[in-house]
Length: 338
Length: 58
Image (cartoon, rainbow over all chains, first blue to last red):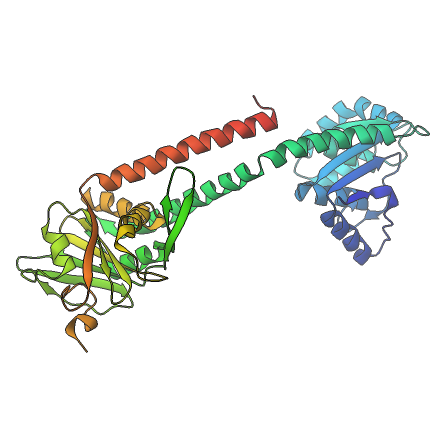
């Protein structure tokens, strides 16, 4: 663990060394601030001290910050706190004016009024101001703090996988929110506004699918379906399936309804088939079809592996229905059905 | 080139070895989606509970 003790950091007055100091802070896991009666070097262009800039960097980066303040300094700060609140209320949106007014405060122990500005900022951001006495060893106090941080870290480590899982959930919600809006704008009154764009957006969601055989104690990988290479969209008319649009690597045309060899016709005309999956052994390719109103969508999933044995076909179908891509198909169905 | 090779939108299941693998009736897809959603909600609640314990908010 990298801990930055500010007292040990030599910050020279030129800008590059300040930048280096801030880089050190970013690279550290924790910042321990020791604050006495003086504020340290000021950077006039920023209107802040180097220590203050380092604290702000640590705060923005979400680093753990421990603050130790000379007891007499902290006492004086709390005596002046109400006054600081009043000035802050007056100049809450004018930092430089706030600093100028604080500079007029009379202090007995604090030799540099900017210390008050720094402490006020720390206090407002919710940092606990631990006090220390000069000449008294702080080791035990710091060890105690580090020990409590360590305990808390261990508790977080125990839910590391849950945090990753929550992030995964978050990404699913975010993606679904974004992509469903993109689909919504392409459907109006149950009709497709721009079929090519719709198919293209839908195809983008048809990602790789890992097909597994799930037993009570383990999951056995059967195969992987590559992202969909194409989607075709047909509409059932009086005597044929009319090709409305296609997306991806495919050549397609209208299919007469009396062509009983066509999987599109079979799916469209069988009222029992809401979704259907066909497998092309010659191309090692799956056709996943789903119906909405008079439309039939056909998604082409190439199998990335050897020819799938018949006994595993059902697993492929279920894997598709449980995939992210199908969630969008289902959403689209609901959207178009009204 | 065979007709069925050229046309990839679902013409001849005879010229190429194409078989029906599985099909689902209306409502099956909805069942799967609802099952997934319920599992996700359950998992999400369990994660939130663990977070709350660690953060000491309960």
